Length: 192
Image (cartoon, rainbow, N blue to C red; front, side, top):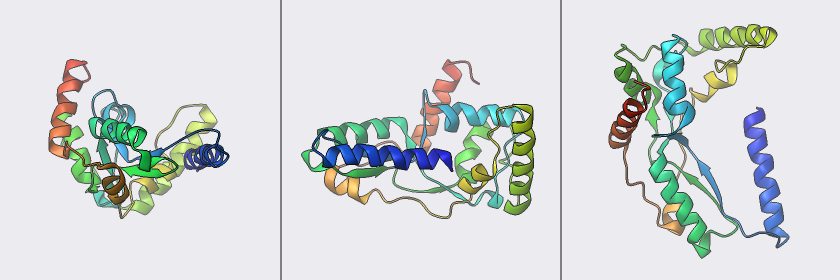
């Protein structure tokens, strides 16, 4: 997957430069970032819902690893300031995985839509692959791909224990409060 490969390559370059003494660094690996000002997991999902192009695979039981933008900023600042962080990589999330149907139910509610819609993974993956091939041939941007389906069928989340122990990181804003702030921002910006 090109996105994941580019992230791994970028980390390798940064850690290599750090090992050669060229730059001090601490790497942050954020989960699924949402909140005011955020792209895909906030505004992008609404766009797909409006186009009726959003169906959750695995009957909505896949695990999403959200991190509210303010929690991410706190973690990044902590990683930048802590001497113990130098040369380390930290995964940052809100500390718990949630089923995709729980996470995306907020987006549906904001739009006054029932849902989330979900279905079995294999037919949805086959449909996504076909849609993606057609979109590529027509030169159309497409977010509905096989890897996107795979991403929404993850069965686990990430540990933030290293960030907790070395950085003192503790997410301050939980999902309900984060979604309330996100909804208020979306309304103020005219997205809802």
